[in-house]
Image (cartoon, rainbow, N blue to C red):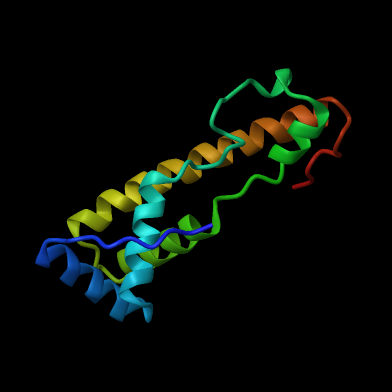
Length: 129
């Protein structure tokens, strides 16, 4: 479900969103919506309460082994990483990239913990190098 809203932004913020939209071939509205979602949406209902993997059911452990960053966050992270490689990150984007990298690392850690637990319970084979 989606709700349409009208927001008043400072001109600087809107122009920054416009530039980002041009660079990424996206609509300004999509850039703004993605940015708001990134900062306000929960990372994942699965990770909201970090119960230790050992306390989870087999089904929950297996579900966490497939944990991924939400698509909107993943797309934004990719865009920011490309801008960083091109040396075109603004200070605001740098802060956003840092936050998204932290989210990514936390998800990766949670997934690794679930994989370890799944292997120890015999639910999955160990990953081969």
